[in-house]
Image (cartoon, rainbow over all chains, first blue to last red; front, side):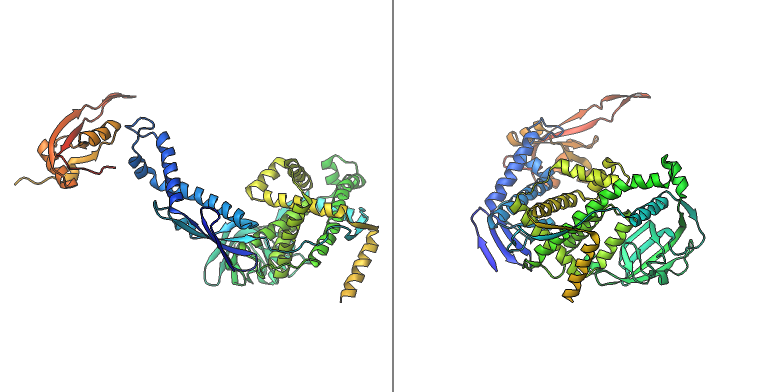
Length: 460
Length: 96
Protein backbone atom coordinates (compact mmCIF):
# COMPACT_ATOMS: atom_id res chain seq x y z
CA UNK A 1 0.00 0.00 0.00
CA UNK A 2 1.32 3.40 -0.87
CA UNK A 3 -0.21 6.81 -0.27
CA UNK A 4 1.24 9.95 -1.78
CA UNK A 5 0.17 13.44 -0.92
CA UNK A 6 1.49 16.95 -0.71
CA UNK A 7 -0.86 18.69 1.71
CA UNK A 8 2.18 20.43 3.24
CA UNK A 9 4.99 21.82 1.12
CA UNK A 10 6.82 18.47 1.28
CA UNK A 11 5.93 15.43 -0.75
CA UNK A 12 5.41 12.43 1.53
CA UNK A 13 5.12 8.87 0.37
CA UNK A 14 4.27 6.17 2.93
CA UNK A 15 4.64 2.48 2.19
CA UNK A 16 4.30 -0.70 4.29
CA UNK A 17 7.49 -2.64 4.93
CA UNK A 18 6.05 -5.24 7.28
CA UNK A 19 3.71 -5.42 10.25
CA UNK A 20 3.95 -2.22 12.32
CA UNK A 21 6.65 -0.81 10.06
CA UNK A 22 6.36 1.95 7.50
CA UNK A 23 8.77 3.53 5.11
CA UNK A 24 8.52 7.28 4.62
CA UNK A 25 9.93 8.94 1.54
CA UNK A 26 10.01 12.66 2.08
CA UNK A 27 10.88 15.21 -0.58
CA UNK A 28 11.68 18.71 0.64
CA UNK A 29 11.33 21.20 -2.24
CA UNK A 30 14.33 23.17 -3.49
CA UNK A 31 12.80 26.46 -2.32
CA UNK A 32 12.58 25.19 1.28
CA UNK A 33 16.18 23.97 1.11
CA UNK A 34 17.36 27.36 -0.19
CA UNK A 35 15.33 29.21 2.47
CA UNK A 36 16.75 27.06 5.25
CA UNK A 37 20.34 27.42 4.04
CA UNK A 38 19.90 31.18 3.57
CA UNK A 39 18.42 31.64 7.03
CA UNK A 40 21.18 29.63 8.68
CA UNK A 41 23.86 31.56 6.78
CA UNK A 42 22.33 34.92 7.62
CA UNK A 43 22.03 34.02 11.28
CA UNK A 44 25.68 33.04 11.37
CA UNK A 45 26.83 36.09 9.39
CA UNK A 46 25.22 38.39 11.91
CA UNK A 47 27.05 36.72 14.80
CA UNK A 48 30.33 35.51 13.31
CA UNK A 49 33.56 37.07 14.46
CA UNK A 50 36.72 36.27 12.47
CA UNK A 51 40.22 37.78 12.87
CA UNK A 52 40.49 40.90 10.70
CA UNK A 53 36.75 41.51 10.62
CA UNK A 54 34.36 43.25 12.98
CA UNK A 55 31.41 41.23 14.26
CA UNK A 56 28.74 41.03 11.58
CA UNK A 57 31.04 42.36 8.82
CA UNK A 58 32.44 39.04 7.60
CA UNK A 59 31.53 38.48 3.91
CA UNK A 60 28.91 35.78 3.37
CA UNK A 61 31.12 33.92 0.93
CA UNK A 62 33.89 33.67 3.49
CA UNK A 63 31.45 32.38 6.09
CA UNK A 64 30.16 29.81 3.66
CA UNK A 65 33.69 28.71 2.78
CA UNK A 66 34.71 28.35 6.42
CA UNK A 67 31.50 27.01 7.97
CA UNK A 68 29.60 25.74 4.92
CA UNK A 69 29.71 22.08 5.93
CA UNK A 70 28.52 22.86 9.46
CA UNK A 71 25.74 25.13 8.20
CA UNK A 72 24.56 22.47 5.76
CA UNK A 73 24.59 19.80 8.45
CA UNK A 74 22.68 21.97 10.89
CA UNK A 75 20.16 23.03 8.26
CA UNK A 76 19.75 19.39 7.19
CA UNK A 77 19.06 18.21 10.73
CA UNK A 78 16.55 20.99 11.25
CA UNK A 79 14.79 20.37 7.94
CA UNK A 80 14.69 16.59 8.41
CA UNK A 81 13.28 16.89 11.94
CA UNK A 82 10.60 19.36 10.85
CA UNK A 83 9.71 17.40 7.73
CA UNK A 84 9.54 14.11 9.66
CA UNK A 85 7.28 15.59 12.35
CA UNK A 86 5.05 17.21 9.73
CA UNK A 87 4.85 13.94 7.78
CA UNK A 88 3.87 11.96 10.90
CA UNK A 89 1.20 14.54 11.76
CA UNK A 90 -0.10 14.67 8.22
CA UNK A 91 -0.32 10.89 7.83
CA UNK A 92 -1.46 10.44 11.43
CA UNK A 93 1.29 7.92 12.16
CA UNK A 94 1.73 6.83 15.77
CA UNK A 95 5.49 6.42 15.71
CA UNK A 96 7.11 4.26 18.37
CA UNK A 97 10.81 4.77 19.12
CA UNK A 98 13.33 6.55 16.96
CA UNK A 99 13.28 6.31 13.16
CA UNK A 100 15.78 3.93 11.63
CA UNK A 101 17.99 5.16 8.83
CA UNK A 102 21.54 4.51 7.85
CA UNK A 103 21.72 6.60 4.66
CA UNK A 104 20.59 9.96 6.01
CA UNK A 105 24.04 10.82 7.30
CA UNK A 106 25.57 10.44 3.87
CA UNK A 107 23.05 12.76 2.18
CA UNK A 108 23.91 16.45 1.81
CA UNK A 109 21.82 19.56 1.24
CA UNK A 110 22.48 21.11 -2.14
CA UNK A 111 21.32 24.66 -2.76
CA UNK A 112 18.74 24.79 -5.53
CA UNK A 113 17.96 21.07 -5.44
CA UNK A 114 15.17 19.25 -3.57
CA UNK A 115 16.27 17.13 -0.63
CA UNK A 116 14.93 13.58 -0.70
CA UNK A 117 15.35 11.12 2.14
CA UNK A 118 13.82 7.86 3.34
CA UNK A 119 13.28 6.64 6.89
CA UNK A 120 11.77 3.50 8.33
CA UNK A 121 9.63 3.84 11.39
CA UNK A 122 8.00 1.49 13.82
CA UNK A 123 4.34 2.40 14.21
CA UNK A 124 1.66 1.32 16.62
CA UNK A 125 -0.54 -1.28 14.89
CA UNK A 126 -4.21 -0.70 14.18
CA UNK A 127 -6.50 -2.64 16.52
CA UNK A 128 -9.73 -2.32 18.45
CA UNK A 129 -9.38 -1.84 22.19
CA UNK A 130 -11.54 -4.31 24.20
CA UNK A 131 -13.96 -3.16 26.88
CA UNK A 132 -11.95 -1.95 29.89
CA UNK A 133 -14.76 -2.18 32.44
CA UNK A 134 -15.98 -5.12 34.54
CA UNK A 135 -12.99 -7.44 34.00
CA UNK A 136 -13.10 -10.34 36.48
CA UNK A 137 -9.98 -10.37 38.68
CA UNK A 138 -8.93 -12.62 41.60
CA UNK A 139 -7.09 -10.92 44.48
CA UNK A 140 -4.88 -13.23 46.57
CA UNK A 141 -4.53 -11.90 50.11
CA UNK A 142 -1.07 -10.59 50.89
CA UNK A 143 0.72 -12.26 53.79
CA UNK A 144 4.33 -12.63 54.90
CA UNK A 145 4.89 -16.34 55.57
CA UNK A 146 7.59 -17.80 57.85
CA UNK A 147 9.28 -19.46 54.86
CA UNK A 148 9.52 -16.12 53.09
CA UNK A 149 10.97 -14.51 56.20
CA UNK A 150 13.53 -17.32 56.70
CA UNK A 151 14.66 -17.00 53.06
CA UNK A 152 15.06 -13.24 53.49
CA UNK A 153 17.17 -13.72 56.63
CA UNK A 154 19.35 -16.19 54.72
CA UNK A 155 19.73 -13.69 51.88
CA UNK A 156 20.73 -10.98 54.35
CA UNK A 157 23.42 -13.25 55.83
CA UNK A 158 24.82 -13.82 52.32
CA UNK A 159 24.73 -10.06 51.61
CA UNK A 160 26.62 -9.38 54.84
CA UNK A 161 29.01 -12.28 54.25
CA UNK A 162 32.69 -12.07 53.40
CA UNK A 163 34.70 -13.15 50.36
CA UNK A 164 37.23 -15.95 50.65
CA UNK A 165 39.71 -16.36 47.80
CA UNK A 166 39.99 -19.91 46.42
CA UNK A 167 42.46 -21.70 44.19
CA UNK A 168 39.88 -23.62 42.18
CA UNK A 169 36.17 -23.03 41.73
CA UNK A 170 33.37 -25.17 43.08
CA UNK A 171 29.61 -24.88 42.42
CA UNK A 172 28.27 -21.56 43.73
CA UNK A 173 31.66 -19.79 43.67
CA UNK A 174 32.11 -16.46 41.90
CA UNK A 175 34.84 -16.12 39.28
CA UNK A 176 36.14 -12.77 37.99
CA UNK A 177 38.07 -12.68 34.75
CA UNK A 178 38.50 -11.62 31.13
CA UNK A 179 35.83 -12.63 28.63
CA UNK A 180 35.79 -12.47 24.84
CA UNK A 181 32.60 -13.23 22.95
CA UNK A 182 33.04 -13.94 19.25
CA UNK A 183 31.30 -15.64 16.37
CA UNK A 184 32.75 -18.74 14.74
CA UNK A 185 33.79 -16.42 11.87
CA UNK A 186 36.05 -14.55 14.31
CA UNK A 187 33.91 -11.41 14.62
CA UNK A 188 34.22 -10.10 18.18
CA UNK A 189 30.92 -8.95 19.72
CA UNK A 190 32.13 -8.21 23.23
CA UNK A 191 35.39 -8.20 25.17
CA UNK A 192 36.01 -7.00 28.70
CA UNK A 193 37.87 -7.55 31.93
CA UNK A 194 36.21 -7.97 35.31
CA UNK A 195 33.42 -10.24 34.09
CA UNK A 196 31.87 -12.12 37.01
CA UNK A 197 30.54 -15.63 36.46
CA UNK A 198 28.89 -17.77 39.08
CA UNK A 199 29.75 -21.44 38.73
CA UNK A 200 26.23 -22.90 38.54
CA UNK A 201 25.20 -23.94 42.07
CA UNK A 202 23.91 -27.47 42.66
CA UNK A 203 20.23 -26.46 42.40
CA UNK A 204 20.71 -24.78 39.00
CA UNK A 205 23.53 -26.85 37.44
CA UNK A 206 24.39 -27.50 34.68
CA UNK A 207 22.56 -24.35 33.44
CA UNK A 208 24.35 -21.06 34.04
CA UNK A 209 24.92 -17.56 32.75
CA UNK A 210 28.00 -15.94 31.24
CA UNK A 211 28.28 -12.52 29.53
CA UNK A 212 24.49 -12.20 29.62
CA UNK A 213 23.89 -15.50 27.82
CA UNK A 214 22.28 -18.59 29.26
CA UNK A 215 24.34 -21.71 28.55
CA UNK A 216 22.53 -24.99 29.15
CA UNK A 217 25.64 -27.02 30.04
CA UNK A 218 27.81 -24.28 31.55
CA UNK A 219 29.05 -26.45 34.46
CA UNK A 220 30.27 -29.09 32.02
CA UNK A 221 31.94 -26.59 29.70
CA UNK A 222 33.61 -24.67 32.53
CA UNK A 223 35.12 -27.84 34.00
CA UNK A 224 37.37 -27.15 36.96
CA UNK A 225 38.18 -23.46 36.85
CA UNK A 226 41.52 -22.19 38.10
CA UNK A 227 43.04 -18.70 37.97
CA UNK A 228 44.87 -18.07 34.67
CA UNK A 229 43.49 -21.21 32.99
CA UNK A 230 41.48 -20.22 29.89
CA UNK A 231 38.28 -22.06 29.09
CA UNK A 232 36.29 -22.01 25.86
CA UNK A 233 32.52 -22.09 25.98
CA UNK A 234 30.38 -22.75 22.94
CA UNK A 235 26.77 -21.63 22.71
CA UNK A 236 24.12 -20.34 20.32
CA UNK A 237 23.03 -16.70 20.09
CA UNK A 238 19.59 -16.21 21.68
CA UNK A 239 16.69 -15.44 19.34
CA UNK A 240 15.81 -12.17 21.06
CA UNK A 241 19.27 -10.71 21.52
CA UNK A 242 19.59 -6.92 21.18
CA UNK A 243 22.45 -7.47 18.71
CA UNK A 244 20.65 -8.85 15.67
CA UNK A 245 23.89 -10.22 14.18
CA UNK A 246 24.24 -12.60 17.14
CA UNK A 247 20.79 -14.18 16.84
CA UNK A 248 20.94 -17.89 16.10
CA UNK A 249 24.70 -17.74 15.45
CA UNK A 250 27.23 -20.19 16.88
CA UNK A 251 29.19 -18.23 19.47
CA UNK A 252 32.46 -18.89 21.24
CA UNK A 253 33.28 -17.39 24.63
CA UNK A 254 36.89 -17.41 25.75
CA UNK A 255 37.05 -16.89 29.49
CA UNK A 256 40.22 -16.50 31.54
CA UNK A 257 39.61 -16.44 35.30
CA UNK A 258 41.74 -13.97 37.27
CA UNK A 259 40.27 -14.54 40.73
CA UNK A 260 37.95 -17.04 42.37
CA UNK A 261 35.90 -16.12 45.43
CA UNK A 262 33.45 -17.85 47.67
CA UNK A 263 30.87 -15.96 49.69
CA UNK A 264 30.97 -17.12 53.30
CA UNK A 265 27.57 -16.09 54.77
CA UNK A 266 27.84 -14.05 57.95
CA UNK A 267 26.68 -15.59 61.21
CA UNK A 268 23.22 -14.39 62.23
CA UNK A 269 24.58 -13.15 65.57
CA UNK A 270 27.23 -11.14 63.75
CA UNK A 271 24.54 -9.62 61.50
CA UNK A 272 22.47 -8.73 64.59
CA UNK A 273 25.49 -7.00 66.14
CA UNK A 274 26.23 -5.15 62.89
CA UNK A 275 22.69 -3.75 62.74
CA UNK A 276 22.55 -3.11 66.49
CA UNK A 277 19.66 -5.55 66.99
CA UNK A 278 19.21 -7.88 69.94
CA UNK A 279 18.53 -11.22 68.23
CA UNK A 280 17.18 -13.02 65.12
CA UNK A 281 13.59 -12.16 66.04
CA UNK A 282 14.45 -8.48 66.01
CA UNK A 283 15.90 -8.87 62.52
CA UNK A 284 12.81 -10.75 61.38
CA UNK A 285 10.57 -7.99 62.71
CA UNK A 286 12.63 -5.39 60.87
CA UNK A 287 12.46 -7.41 57.67
CA UNK A 288 8.73 -8.12 57.99
CA UNK A 289 7.63 -4.60 57.01
CA UNK A 290 9.89 -4.57 53.97
CA UNK A 291 8.63 -8.00 52.96
CA UNK A 292 5.04 -6.93 53.46
CA UNK A 293 5.65 -4.09 51.02
CA UNK A 294 7.15 -6.57 48.56
CA UNK A 295 4.29 -9.02 48.95
CA UNK A 296 1.86 -6.19 48.26
CA UNK A 297 3.78 -5.38 45.10
CA UNK A 298 3.57 -9.06 44.12
CA UNK A 299 -0.16 -9.03 44.83
CA UNK A 300 -0.65 -5.98 42.65
CA UNK A 301 1.51 -7.66 40.00
CA UNK A 302 -0.65 -10.80 40.01
CA UNK A 303 -3.79 -8.72 39.57
CA UNK A 304 -2.18 -6.67 36.82
CA UNK A 305 -1.16 -9.88 35.06
CA UNK A 306 -4.78 -11.02 35.05
CA UNK A 307 -5.87 -7.73 33.52
CA UNK A 308 -3.14 -7.83 30.86
CA UNK A 309 -3.98 -11.45 30.05
CA UNK A 310 -7.62 -10.50 29.58
CA UNK A 311 -6.66 -7.60 27.32
CA UNK A 312 -4.32 -9.76 25.24
CA UNK A 313 -6.86 -12.57 24.92
CA UNK A 314 -9.52 -10.17 23.70
CA UNK A 315 -7.46 -8.21 21.17
CA UNK A 316 -6.51 -9.08 17.63
CA UNK A 317 -3.41 -7.28 16.52
CA UNK A 318 -0.92 -7.72 13.73
CA UNK A 319 2.64 -7.49 15.02
CA UNK A 320 5.96 -8.59 13.53
CA UNK A 321 6.89 -12.27 13.98
CA UNK A 322 10.46 -11.37 14.76
CA UNK A 323 11.56 -8.44 16.88
CA UNK A 324 13.90 -5.76 15.61
CA UNK A 325 16.96 -4.79 17.66
CA UNK A 326 15.20 -1.78 19.19
CA UNK A 327 12.12 -3.84 20.08
CA UNK A 328 14.28 -6.51 21.72
CA UNK A 329 16.15 -3.91 23.70
CA UNK A 330 12.91 -2.34 24.86
CA UNK A 331 11.52 -5.75 25.79
CA UNK A 332 14.58 -6.61 27.88
CA UNK A 333 14.70 -3.19 29.51
CA UNK A 334 11.03 -3.52 30.46
CA UNK A 335 11.72 -6.90 32.02
CA UNK A 336 14.74 -5.55 33.91
CA UNK A 337 12.85 -2.51 35.17
CA UNK A 338 9.91 -4.67 36.31
CA UNK A 339 12.22 -6.96 38.30
CA UNK A 340 14.04 -4.02 39.86
CA UNK A 341 10.69 -2.70 41.05
CA UNK A 342 9.88 -6.10 42.53
CA UNK A 343 13.05 -5.88 44.64
CA UNK A 344 14.94 -8.75 43.06
CA UNK A 345 18.67 -8.71 43.65
CA UNK A 346 20.90 -7.59 40.74
CA UNK A 347 22.38 -11.04 40.05
CA UNK A 348 18.94 -12.63 39.85
CA UNK A 349 17.80 -9.80 37.56
CA UNK A 350 20.68 -10.35 35.15
CA UNK A 351 20.00 -14.10 35.16
CA UNK A 352 16.35 -13.48 34.38
CA UNK A 353 17.26 -11.02 31.61
CA UNK A 354 19.60 -13.61 30.11
CA UNK A 355 16.75 -16.13 30.27
CA UNK A 356 14.45 -13.60 28.59
CA UNK A 357 16.97 -13.24 25.75
CA UNK A 358 16.81 -16.96 25.22
CA UNK A 359 13.03 -17.15 25.60
CA UNK A 360 10.80 -17.87 22.65
CA UNK A 361 10.04 -15.08 20.23
CA UNK A 362 6.34 -15.56 21.12
CA UNK A 363 6.96 -14.17 24.64
CA UNK A 364 8.68 -11.12 23.26
CA UNK A 365 5.96 -10.55 20.70
CA UNK A 366 3.33 -10.91 23.44
CA UNK A 367 5.15 -8.23 25.40
CA UNK A 368 5.22 -6.00 22.34
CA UNK A 369 1.46 -6.42 21.90
CA UNK A 370 0.94 -5.49 25.52
CA UNK A 371 3.04 -2.38 25.06
CA UNK A 372 0.80 -1.15 22.24
CA UNK A 373 -2.37 -2.19 24.07
CA UNK A 374 -1.54 -0.37 27.28
CA UNK A 375 -0.34 2.67 25.38
CA UNK A 376 -3.75 2.94 23.70
CA UNK A 377 -5.58 2.21 26.96
CA UNK A 378 -3.56 4.93 28.76
CA UNK A 379 -4.55 7.39 26.08
CA UNK A 380 -8.20 6.40 26.36
CA UNK A 381 -8.20 6.65 30.16
CA UNK A 382 -6.16 9.88 30.15
CA UNK A 383 -3.35 8.48 32.31
CA UNK A 384 -0.53 10.94 33.01
CA UNK A 385 2.77 10.43 34.86
CA UNK A 386 4.34 13.24 36.88
CA UNK A 387 7.99 13.85 37.72
CA UNK A 388 7.29 13.28 41.41
CA UNK A 389 5.82 9.83 40.64
CA UNK A 390 9.01 8.87 38.82
CA UNK A 391 11.09 10.13 41.75
CA UNK A 392 8.87 8.23 44.20
CA UNK A 393 9.32 5.01 42.24
CA UNK A 394 13.10 5.51 42.16
CA UNK A 395 13.09 6.07 45.94
CA UNK A 396 11.14 2.82 46.49
CA UNK A 397 13.52 0.89 44.23
CA UNK A 398 16.55 2.42 45.96
CA UNK A 399 15.23 1.33 49.35
CA UNK A 400 14.82 -2.24 48.12
CA UNK A 401 18.38 -2.27 46.78
CA UNK A 402 19.92 -0.49 49.77
CA UNK A 403 21.14 2.33 47.54
CA UNK A 404 20.87 6.10 47.67
CA UNK A 405 17.98 7.38 45.48
CA UNK A 406 20.17 10.05 43.80
CA UNK A 407 22.75 7.40 42.92
CA UNK A 408 20.13 5.06 41.45
CA UNK A 409 18.50 7.94 39.58
CA UNK A 410 21.84 8.87 38.01
CA UNK A 411 22.53 5.21 37.13
CA UNK A 412 19.12 4.97 35.44
CA UNK A 413 19.76 8.19 33.49
CA UNK A 414 23.20 6.96 32.42
CA UNK A 415 21.83 3.63 31.21
CA UNK A 416 18.88 5.33 29.44
CA UNK A 417 16.35 3.47 31.58
CA UNK A 418 14.43 6.48 32.84
CA UNK A 419 12.08 6.38 29.85
CA UNK A 420 11.49 2.66 30.49
CA UNK A 421 10.65 3.49 34.10
CA UNK A 422 8.30 6.23 32.91
CA UNK A 423 6.54 3.76 30.60
CA UNK A 424 6.38 1.21 33.40
CA UNK A 425 4.69 3.65 35.77
CA UNK A 426 2.28 4.69 33.02
CA UNK A 427 1.42 1.06 32.35
CA UNK A 428 0.96 0.28 36.06
CA UNK A 429 -1.29 3.31 36.45
CA UNK A 430 -3.27 2.29 33.38
CA UNK A 431 -3.77 -1.25 34.66
CA UNK A 432 -4.65 0.12 38.09
CA UNK A 433 -7.22 2.39 36.47
CA UNK A 434 -8.68 -0.66 34.72
CA UNK A 435 -8.53 -2.60 38.01
CA UNK A 436 -10.51 0.14 39.72
CA UNK A 437 -13.38 -0.67 37.34
CA UNK A 438 -12.88 -4.45 37.54
CA UNK A 439 -14.90 -7.06 39.46
CA UNK A 440 -12.40 -8.10 42.17
CA UNK A 441 -12.81 -11.32 44.20
CA UNK A 442 -10.59 -11.62 47.29
CA UNK A 443 -9.27 -15.09 48.17
CA UNK A 444 -6.56 -16.82 50.19
CA UNK A 445 -3.28 -17.49 48.45
CA UNK A 446 -3.84 -21.28 48.57
CA UNK A 447 -7.28 -20.90 46.97
CA UNK A 448 -5.78 -18.67 44.33
CA UNK A 449 -3.12 -21.28 43.49
CA UNK A 450 -5.78 -24.01 43.36
CA UNK A 451 -7.89 -21.94 41.01
CA UNK A 452 -4.89 -21.38 38.76
CA UNK A 453 -4.07 -25.11 38.70
CA UNK A 454 -7.67 -25.97 37.84
CA UNK A 455 -7.65 -23.43 35.05
CA UNK A 456 -4.46 -24.82 33.54
CA UNK A 457 -5.84 -28.39 33.80
CA UNK A 458 -9.04 -27.33 32.08
CA UNK A 459 -6.99 -25.75 29.27
CA UNK A 460 -5.07 -29.01 28.72
CA UNK B 1 72.25 30.87 -13.93
CA UNK B 2 69.88 32.13 -11.23
CA UNK B 3 67.48 29.51 -9.85
CA UNK B 4 63.81 30.35 -10.24
CA UNK B 5 62.07 30.58 -6.83
CA UNK B 6 58.77 28.75 -6.48
CA UNK B 7 55.73 31.08 -6.52
CA UNK B 8 54.25 29.49 -3.41
CA UNK B 9 57.47 30.27 -1.56
CA UNK B 10 57.15 33.96 -2.41
CA UNK B 11 53.42 34.29 -1.74
CA UNK B 12 52.85 33.06 1.82
CA UNK B 13 49.11 33.66 2.02
CA UNK B 14 46.44 36.15 1.03
CA UNK B 15 45.49 38.52 3.85
CA UNK B 16 41.76 38.45 4.35
CA UNK B 17 40.58 41.36 6.47
CA UNK B 18 37.67 43.75 6.26
CA UNK B 19 39.93 46.42 4.76
CA UNK B 20 41.50 44.11 2.17
CA UNK B 21 38.10 42.73 1.18
CA UNK B 22 36.79 46.25 0.58
CA UNK B 23 39.97 47.12 -1.38
CA UNK B 24 39.61 44.02 -3.54
CA UNK B 25 35.97 44.80 -4.31
CA UNK B 26 36.32 48.52 -4.92
CA UNK B 27 39.93 49.08 -6.07
CA UNK B 28 40.76 45.66 -7.50
CA UNK B 29 43.66 45.58 -5.05
CA UNK B 30 44.56 42.36 -3.25
CA UNK B 31 46.80 41.96 -0.23
CA UNK B 32 49.24 39.09 0.31
CA UNK B 33 51.79 38.22 2.92
CA UNK B 34 55.00 37.59 1.01
CA UNK B 35 58.51 36.42 1.72
CA UNK B 36 60.60 39.10 3.43
CA UNK B 37 63.27 38.98 0.73
CA UNK B 38 60.90 38.94 -2.24
CA UNK B 39 61.17 41.81 -4.68
CA UNK B 40 58.28 43.51 -6.44
CA UNK B 41 59.25 41.80 -9.70
CA UNK B 42 59.27 38.37 -8.09
CA UNK B 43 55.95 39.07 -6.39
CA UNK B 44 54.46 40.20 -9.70
CA UNK B 45 55.50 37.07 -11.57
CA UNK B 46 54.45 34.86 -8.62
CA UNK B 47 50.95 36.38 -8.49
CA UNK B 48 50.62 36.21 -12.27
CA UNK B 49 51.65 32.56 -12.42
CA UNK B 50 49.65 31.47 -9.37
CA UNK B 51 46.37 33.22 -10.14
CA UNK B 52 46.71 33.58 -13.94
CA UNK B 53 46.08 37.36 -13.87
CA UNK B 54 47.90 40.46 -15.02
CA UNK B 55 49.32 42.76 -12.37
CA UNK B 56 49.29 46.51 -12.83
CA UNK B 57 51.06 47.79 -9.75
CA UNK B 58 52.58 46.52 -6.53
CA UNK B 59 53.18 48.36 -3.28
CA UNK B 60 55.04 46.61 -0.53
CA UNK B 61 55.51 47.32 3.13
CA UNK B 62 57.51 45.64 5.86
CA UNK B 63 55.63 45.33 9.09
CA UNK B 64 57.88 45.30 12.09
CA UNK B 65 57.43 42.44 14.49
CA UNK B 66 55.84 43.46 17.76
CA UNK B 67 57.80 43.41 20.98
CA UNK B 68 56.47 40.82 23.34
CA UNK B 69 57.32 40.51 26.99
CA UNK B 70 58.23 37.00 28.12
CA UNK B 71 59.60 35.81 31.43
CA UNK B 72 63.08 36.00 29.93
CA UNK B 73 62.70 39.62 28.80
CA UNK B 74 61.56 41.38 25.62
CA UNK B 75 61.47 39.43 22.39
CA UNK B 76 60.85 40.93 18.96
CA UNK B 77 58.85 38.88 16.49
CA UNK B 78 60.19 38.44 12.94
CA UNK B 79 59.00 41.25 10.64
CA UNK B 80 56.63 40.36 7.79
CA UNK B 81 56.33 41.75 4.29
CA UNK B 82 52.94 42.65 2.86
CA UNK B 83 52.28 43.28 -0.79
CA UNK B 84 49.28 45.23 -2.10
CA UNK B 85 48.77 44.02 -5.64
CA UNK B 86 46.60 46.03 -8.02
CA UNK B 87 45.35 44.08 -10.99
CA UNK B 88 44.65 45.36 -14.47
CA UNK B 89 41.04 46.27 -15.18
CA UNK B 90 38.78 43.30 -15.74
CA UNK B 91 41.10 40.92 -13.85
CA UNK B 92 39.91 39.17 -10.69
CA UNK B 93 41.15 36.76 -8.03
CA UNK B 94 38.69 34.50 -6.19
CA UNK B 95 40.15 34.48 -2.70
CA UNK B 96 36.93 33.56 -0.91
